[in-house]
Image (tube, protein in one colour):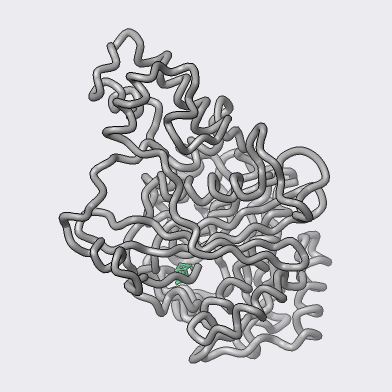
Length: 408
Ligand code: SF4
């Protein structure tokens, strides 16, 4: 997702100084073991640590509190000690935009880490009937340079921490009234029943498998049954194809998988998704075949951006079907959304439909859907500096919505 470094205010410039590095350590995003260790450092006796972790976990992830004073069953003294050393505060919301169709977009600012600078990240929420999908980022920038992707042209700034990855979910749940005793904003478009955020997709900015440890920690917290309690079947991690970490994802995280495929021949994929030079198609598809727990109800999503005259021939479609043979799969055809300076055009609509027909006839679902949130994106487009961000977000909103239907 698009983001900018914010140096516009005196506070943000002051934050560049190492002296301004926040001293309080975030508790959001720690494992239970790390949380227990953190509690020991503020004098919680070892015999109480497990019980205190349980209490904190409940306040942080079931009740959604962001202030120690709200933790009523924890003594005042301990709350004060926690507050002195740790933080559970949410990031600043710089901007919130709401589309007529209910799509929401938040621009969040995270404090500097070490000698770094504050960074901003966009998170997008897409409501549909019976489902609300949140598209989350894992890195600020990206080290990969997929030639059709705007993010790939932006410099890698840093990995997001596990807490910052989770903060995107917590902020969305705050703003949607998705914690107990919280009110949903008047007029908000959300699923008619149950939770407001039902699915998450790790497909915002960055390659999540290049930030494996933080992504793993965040997703294990998000799917913890005593906390945020999102089913792993409703969490999808999208990767460009970091093969060794695909195996680890299956074994250590166990969420649903999406692959940015985009080409069916190594020579073309080397160009579109350069990580293919390191992990070519055969290795990638072997890792997909070995992904644990696949079935018709638990399919891998293959993302395929439709580029005119590049990867959209019917021969490509037939080869795609051949390559995926034996893998329970769903194929998301994504109309390319050009960005300034991009070398590609979107395939003609007829061509996309014919391509989809070949794939459908072979028994694969291959939805093509219309983008969401166009009105907020249009409003955003009136801000010159935000125009590039708008296009990226539009693409992400579309992809996130498409992928959210996966595995159900
Ligand atoms: S498609 Fe994903 S991995 Fe490739 S450059 Fe864009 S953000 Fe990075």
